[in-house]
Image 1 (cartoon, rainbow, N blue to C red):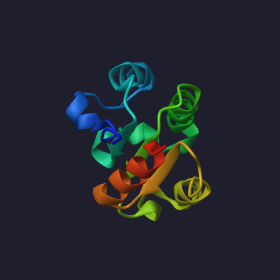
Image 2: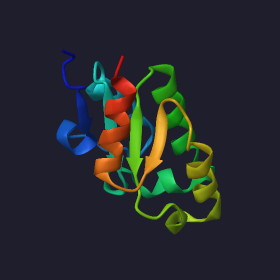
Image 3: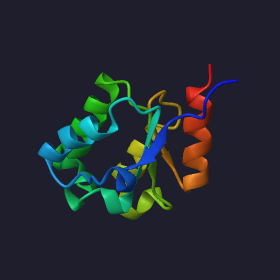
Length: 115
């Protein structure tokens, strides 16, 4: 019998991503987990401004370290058309997905961690 996947929220880890240095704190705090859940409250305004590069840096680090991450955003378009496109592009990404609910996040992360 396989153990339950180790999935934590950024809130449970006591971290958020407001700026680039926070990306490294997040990766360190989430090291060894099977999955990470981020909500809009865990992400600063810069993350949603794609020109800032914060989202790209975060996604690159999550991918480099193989950390499966679900971003919970009830309305992908609430942050603009380009952001909605980004969410759509990640619909089948193996490591980073945008979802609308925590239940959806946990279901995907749990399935992703299965053998």
